[in-house]
Length: 99
Image (cartoon, rainbow, N blue to C red; front, side):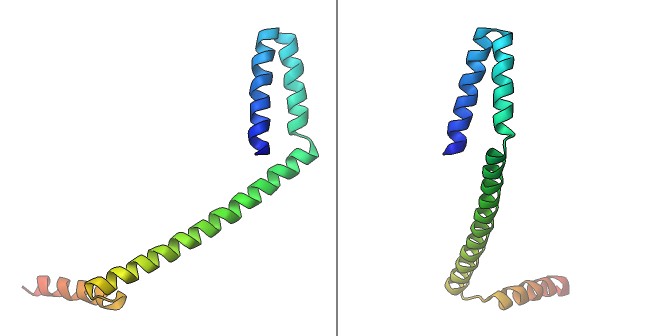
């Protein structure tokens, strides 16, 4: 939420700066640059980066679990198991090669 507010403020600053002239634009640009490079903002950026990394990792784990469950259900429905599907592929290849 804070990032969205910051980006909206930066966009407004850009528009106002470009309408007010180059000098005002440069002043706003320096202020925004000073703000974005401040320690609190850098801390928040680091926290958001860490949180996004954790969320992505958890999402990947959940997706993997769901794929495993779906695969297991599909195997139950088709009457195959993970090991027999590998064996049937090998057997099918052998049968085709032998024919």
